[in-house]
Image (tube, rainbow, N blue to C red):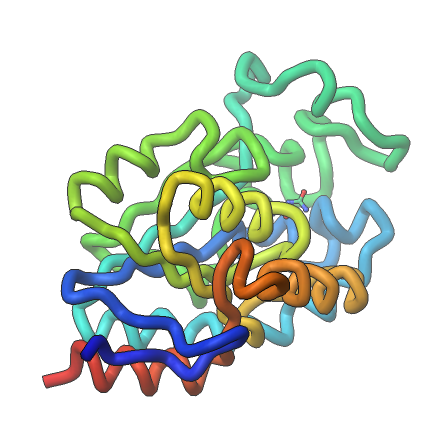
Length: 226
Ligand code: C5J
């Protein structure tokens, strides 16, 4: 009998092999005051509330020696990987590539594009850039997961209804069994977060499972702890 995590819509069975944690876009530009998210008029304070929980999840994966991937949404400095439709979208103060308060918006290597320092990867973890909302589009993620023979993904990060949900749907279509950690993901819009959690778990888990951090770590400890 596989070990399970107490999840919605029903228990999530952990694999005999290792699950991988994917932490989506915990970047300064989305989370810190003065970043890109802030300049779009979003209440970034909502996103800072999950930082300790994401850290707890990371600590658990590290303690159990389970693989971790961190993503950053960004583009090359010459914007050659940014389609016109994305570049020209919106009427905010800044566009992608403009000089913002924390460097050029969504450009790889700029201060605002970095992960929050308290969630920095440790040696052995993959930090991966992505040009789209989903973590599979235009990235090495598929090859990396196949190499490690990963079949199960535990997902955290921001924002729930954009990059997190897109990644989870991409993963689901590729056959991965996905669980979203509900208190380790957040949105600028509380109603969008709740609706996303409901959409994921509807119809018998049409996209996957949802559980809180405590239950997720308890299941992982039962399955992979020594
Ligand atoms: C957005 C993201 N919201 N990481 N990016 O544009 O969800």
